[in-house]
Length: 444
Image (cartoon, rainbow, N blue to C red; front, side, top):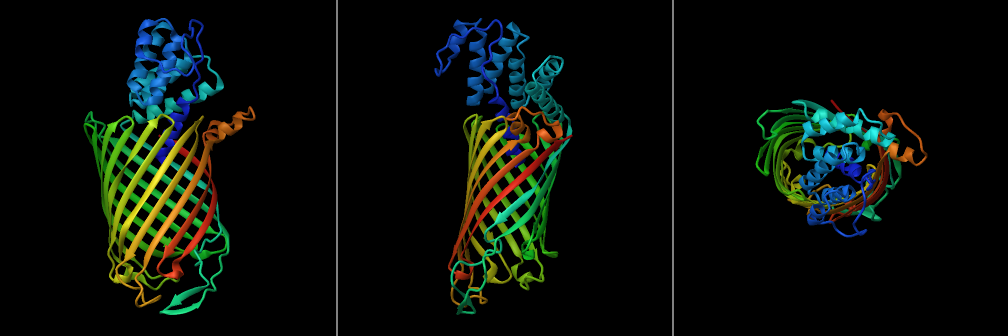
């Protein structure tokens, strides 16, 4: 989430810039025509052309070319603040924090517009933080969600109980929940010159239903490890602990580890492979007496890619194979799951996110609670569409200025649909959900 939000903020800012001419700039290009480097060489004094070329190359992900064009432009027109701010953000994208801080420090002494001032201060803080050997950052999210079928009541008019069909008397009662989550991540650079770092990452989630207490949960996860770079490759080993409480009862502990290997093919394409192995330890609760029958190792292995064809659009795809062992074979399963996501940046930090997640798990043995002969197989689909924007972007529509602490808070509204088709009709369900969430990010 944090990476996604970071990309939204940076690329959204890049899209803010229009080709605002400096006093000495004249346009010599036809609207909509791609600009070539030969045109730049033939028109070295056309500053607006150079700026348009820099924006064009940045939108393609060619940040080195964009930075070179902006550097030449600023030698000729050092007072062009919009170009210098764009240059600082491109340097930030290139991970040149010293260069970004240098340009932003110059802009902090200039007479800027309110929008420019906000961007300068935001990126000055981001660049100085990322330049520190030890850095802490994270986010806090809170809001509300409404579900049409929060307890996942079955669809059919009959269900199975020990092979006997009985009337389905479980109602689909809608409910609203308060939801909040938080994340804090500590990173420490190792000073190797490659960007290697160690990290400690902790996350927590809380869901409090207004009516259905059995859907209440508190969950937390801790990860500790490191990321090491070898040219275009990155290797990230980590240890993991996860705990889950349902309706006040301790329900699950997970201990294990993960290994992720990344490969940066180009500025537009990144690949990853990942293995996650955790030993799951379940407990009996007031809602479930199954307990240790579910205990066993869970292994997720797979990978995917992230592709950015243009600066304002990011598409990612990942697929994994899951193998879950259990003391009781009726709780052991295996099968694939995958997710496709598309993030479209709309400018000024506003974005549109769409996701599709699919699961297809087959269990090792029948569950006698339902049937002694039917082996459970679940196909699940979840589709989600979300729209997010900083609160200051909303305030700009009314020409209002919010305090920075409030203005950079993000608001996201989303809707989702979840559907499951199972060989056990008790487990067929669908649920529509809508949620509104506020997110505040921090870094030190």
